[in-house]
Amino acid sequence: MTDENGRGADMELSALDALKIETGGGEPPLRIGLEIALDMAPGRDPAQTGALAQAVDRFVARFGAGLAWGDPSEGGRPVPLTDAVKTGLGDWIRGGDPSSPQVLHLFGGEAGLPPHPLHLRLFRDADWMPDGACRLILGIPVSALEALPPGAFLEEVCTLTADLSPISGGAGLALLADPQTYGLAEVQPVLIAALRRFPGLDFNPSVLHGLTGGVKRVNWLTVLTAEEAAQLPAALPAPLVLHRCGAGGVLQAGPAPQLGDAEAGLRPEPYHVAGKLLAPMRDQGIKSVFRAISGGDAAALSQEWLAAFD
Image (cartoon, rainbow, N blue to C red; front, side):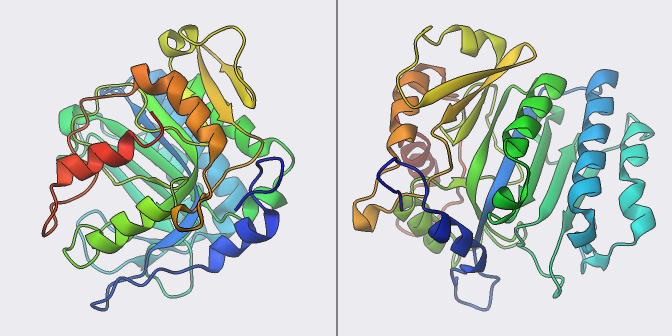
């Protein structure tokens, strides 16, 4: 999945938008997209609120034409989005009742069924989030990376890092699953098998139990706090690059995201280089990314996957 320079092959990356991994049992298939996932400390800091509103406004301004559906927080069928709703999301975040949760799940597509590569998820003070944590996930099709101005995706990750001061985060290729069904017994083995085969894929469930801050897992772009960035050597091994973003930083592992393929013996080498440096900073408190499955311990499987690049 890489060329002689270690870059993801353009044709193969662009083809990922159409890839669907069937899960069986009539459940929605797994897909692949490009995701930014950030975790913020609990609280309703006014600066964080403003930065979240601006982030959502920017995303809608650039990709809003493709956002067609909203998944109501109380459950039920997704509802079509109107332009008035989309353009008012930033104001909704700014003016929200500090004592009330803020939950968004917006996505594209014609069928109204997640997962879709174009999506936005925000979970803030939700009842099921641990300790009132805040999680923002922005997703776009892989092919959109080529359509953006050069460096625009990295610039957005840096802006979010500087403005939101996340305690953990990253961006790159990710495996996408329907938030309502990914934990089902018939879906989990397929999901875990896909992540084992393609080590360059991240996976971002709606909540990470036990996350206290630190690196979740190495990605193409790994978000670092000021303290973590300060632990890196002044001279980084090639092809790593540290981008300073406000008080924190973003560690870039190679010029383009990589998928890898364990079955073909293809390793995302830059991710392994980054993993050796970031292993001491990884958050060891994450209890589980996966759900319990027959014949496997969810916590052990999660730790195996999280430590893949250590």
